[in-house]
Image (cartoon, rainbow, N blue to C red):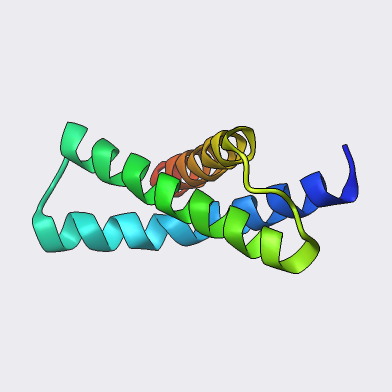
Length: 91
């Protein structure tokens, strides 16, 4: 793993943490739950991943590729899901 990949994963992890309140806000405003909430989380993860890849490209010239976006979506969604589940376990 090189520096560019580390940067995209770091920014994706940060985006994953940022995605939790965004999805929470969407759920609160729309009243969604279940599959609708999962769809909102997935769409939010995709948008945040695109933003992460774009930011990383601007910072260090990382090429915008489908592989990079797919990896970033996985990281953003995974981090957001794990953190959300951890928060739910505390309640």
